[in-house]
Image 1: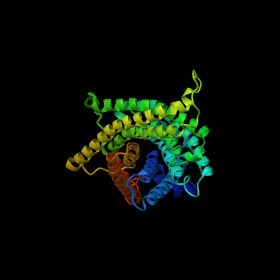
Image 2: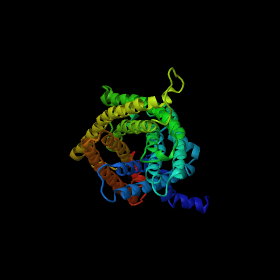
Image 3: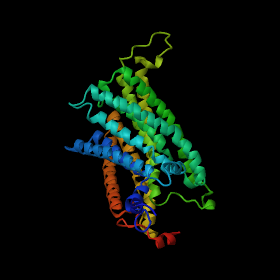
Image 4: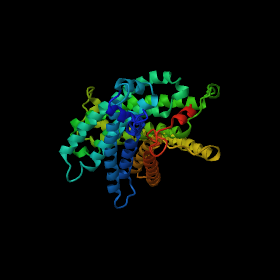
Length: 429
């Protein structure tokens, strides 16, 4: 006979309790929420066309991102600790699920967005200064380690999980690019921290140079693999063997993950622009190159200006590729909505819908930065339009998420925290 505590945890029917069922349904896609919220905060803070109170709104989103990241991390760790039959079995399950493993990288992405806002809001303020600049400097290096680890090791998990799920034709989605976005976000964060509007004036060249070098290495680490995964995804969408295997393009809430393909390009565009500006800020602080000098030639004043401008130009070019993937995703999502309204039941909301928010945010942020670098009204207007749509999307996702949590549909319950019935479960099979 089980203990009273065990019977309480299982419930009177022998089924898991409400809390345990909800906790067991808490998967890594929930990390997409703080990830997207942090990107909204960054966009609103740096937008060109402003109104009184916009800075306050961006800080509210920043605080919300901090609270959401802390809450989701705590709940996810509790889920792993309480997993049955053991936490080790839960970790093996994560390693065999491509989407579950990919979304773990969102922890690093969300954390970097929070650190960027810390550098933009606190360090330049009257309560900031050198001490806070050192804090964000240390936090960047901590997150750099997390991002590089995610970019190096999570794709190795995909080798096992994609084969276990039937090959890339069946399970390869743009969400596999999230570990790469973690490294690219870390690179963009280095550019932000070194900028004049953030902690840049409080950091020495000796502190900035290693950050910038590692940031460019992170771009090289993540962007080429993003190109390869884009090619594989296009092959999946256009491949002639789709109908033979029965595999279909992304359907339902999965279609929102197509926006993730825009993420690496938008984030790299912003990152290279910010890093280019950081290189220009070092001009005159590293010393001139001597005739015939070969050692340390890239770390001289003579190299900073051409490298900085070249970085900005490449950032502009990559934003063009981001525009293709943004358009591709918008058309796919719009077509999916039309198909559901015409012939199918309404699309069910899932936490994975939040995948649209962060890529949209970094694409918008890159447009904001281009508006500043080019002094372009066109980019300023377009980035403002994108920012307005971004906030609307965030509010819609937040409303549907709160509704799903209240009804229990996002936490393993059919509605109003009722467990799925045994008959219903059997019928579904």
